[in-house]
Image 1: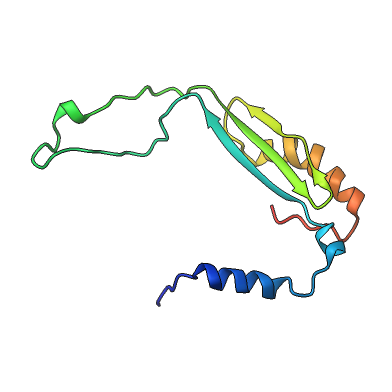
Image 2: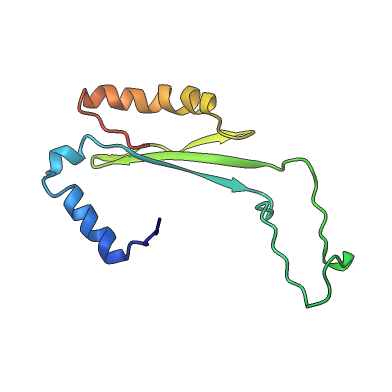
Length: 124
């Protein structure tokens, strides 16, 4: 199997093809959403090591981390052709499936879907 990466030109052509027949009233049925995590610490849990040759396992290059999670927030929002939704802040912990359903889908997405009707599209 060979994986060939699509160029920006390929991606643009695909987008044009996918929605070539879409008119504005189709786009008015779509809600785009995204979420981002903001943290008060710099640690992204990625291990990045910058060292000179021959210094492997040298304790000078080891950085200890605390085991507890520091404060951070998850922020969720949505946009449609008709406007935007308010940003919603989810504090304390990760956004699990249950929290997503309880704090995002039920109170915000489902009412929006009800206003659009059966043609509502949620790619989220």
